[in-house]
Image (cartoon, rainbow, N blue to C red):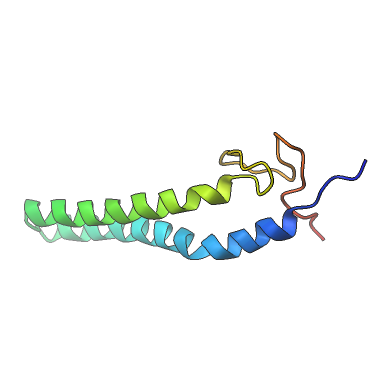
Length: 99
């Protein structure tokens, strides 16, 4: 029995969502480094709260936008964080073989 191959569709989806992943990790890095710098130089508590809120909002929004990447392209079920070669629910190929 031949397994359906959705790896090209999934790779296209990965390219589409790559900017959201960069935004997610960029916001996370800016949050940590920015807070450390602001604390070191004695920033006002209100400024720290505003900065933290804006960065956490960016992390939250980009994280929510990444959720469709973790869904199977065929059955649309959530595959979880650790995506294997095949969908655990419908069995289609998600990731191509490594060459």
